[in-house]
Image (cartoon, rainbow, N blue to C red; front, side, top):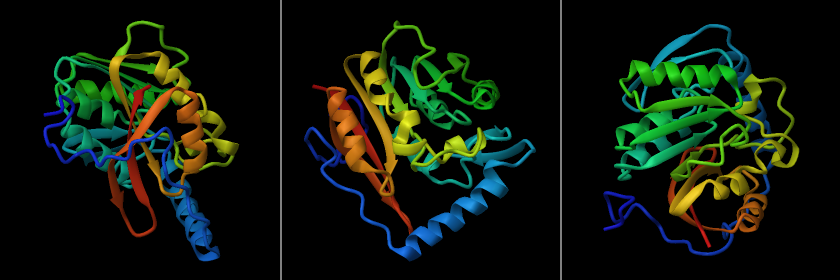
Length: 250
């Protein structure tokens, strides 16, 4: 049995140096629908001014203003459920773009010995630390960092998790950085190279993207970082699919 999973059917093999698929061109209706969803999400969820309390993936979470809300955006819960199926006992885990810390908390619940949660949003780093304490995970560190740039070169990590912004485009402000990653995914372009440098031999990266993401671009970035990719899980909803890729060093 694979040490990384409790269930042998978690991994759907898709070996190769790239993602082996391309994003589909969007119809005018789909572009209109996406614009409406972003408008509502930004004004009523992302850009809110109050602290909220919610339950997601079995955790009680506070959600500070400008922090991605895991109850309204279901990708976080789907990724956390996937992490629940991994055997992370004794592992050191890094979560890049942690938001409320939900993925980092799931890693701690799955047995990780030590977890680091990183986010460029200082509200998110504070939020993740608060939620770790509230949910009883002391072996947990949260840091404000642009991707991995603020982390020391050592120690290395057994597992790196990330659910980066799924859409290109200039973010309006800090709150919108959870949705838009800049033109040509500028703000996350260095993710794979930086993660590769901090991965232990035999370690793995799990990254969630959307069928709306520029998968061709992400595939090139993954190749250039010296990583192989395969599909670990795909979850479809009405307007898109969420895809978790497992990345390993070549």
